[in-house]
Amino acid sequence: MASPRPRIWVSQPLFDDIVDQLAAHCDVDAVREVTVHAPEAVAAALREADGALVTLNERIGAAELAQAPKLRAVANVGVGYNNLDIAALDAAGVIATNTPDVLTETTADLGFALLMAAARRITESERWLREGRWRQWSFSTMLGADVHGSTLGILGMGRIGQAIARRGHHGFGMEVLYHNRSRLPEDVERGVGASYVEFDALLARSDHLVLVLPYSKDSHHIIDAAALARMKPTATLVNIARGGLVDELALADALAGGRLAAAGLDVYEGEPEVRPELLALRNVVLTPHIGSASLATRRAMVQLAVDNLLAALGLGDNAGRPANPVTAKKATGAITGAGKAATGKR
Ligand code: DGY
Image (tube, rainbow, N blue to C red; front, side):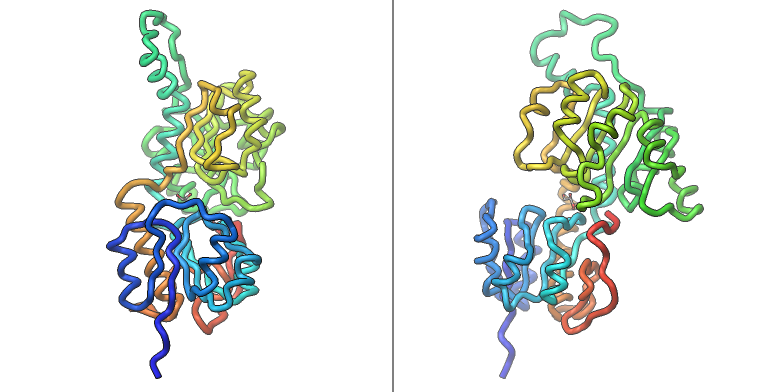
């Protein structure tokens, strides 16, 4: 007797023409409208599912897995996967995958755009102009900080960190410093033009500091009031990784009090909510988690997630060989060594 087709839950509208590829092998239950799923709704959707294609907005942990006896694979459309409880997935024998590489350059572009916009006060200038205030212009209107030739700090030196380093070093003649849990090989450092420094030195020496490290309980609020106090008052802070890396109240306080010049944020601890303390400030550029949001990259992410899901379920051209497992279990029926920690490279 032929085995039944796997059932797949697709949690958000993605790109129909790509998601439809699943239908060649599976029965697909695709959410057609952008939806904020309560945890109980995620659990209910997973109850009959063999596989799931999810975004960073859907959290899957022990409680959801306990109600999902058939679930074998979860493909996250995103490189960060702190929405997934990897230990619980491993315990349940569920494979999880992510989408690295395809978004590296696009996300690095956005990091640089935020750095430029915050340091050169682009969005603040635009608001000022739209408010009809140009007649108040003086020679010191909207003085910002130079980007070219300054010192760029990068916290977290995975793929995206390295792409930002290349932009800074080769494109803007910046001195590039980085801190990472492990130092890069010398030839890689040379290639991206970056030097390793300790965390405190990174804070103290950076004119612009970009956060690109994964979020975990160890990196929670790594930029807190004490860290901010060690930065130059003229510095810019950019966060394109996860909101929980920054104590946002301490950041708002430092920006309001002139102890930090500017910030550019794409991610927030309580997103989609943004703290009123941040919204009230002029010297912070705020974008709604659009790091990977170019059409080509978002399509590539969905394609990779679909390929990963089929492969993890033992289907399609790469059956049993998903390219990007983040759990110890990498393919249906196979346990192949230790999984990446939740702090894996972005
Ligand atoms: C990621 O892939 O982790 C991004 O933050 C999602 O856009």
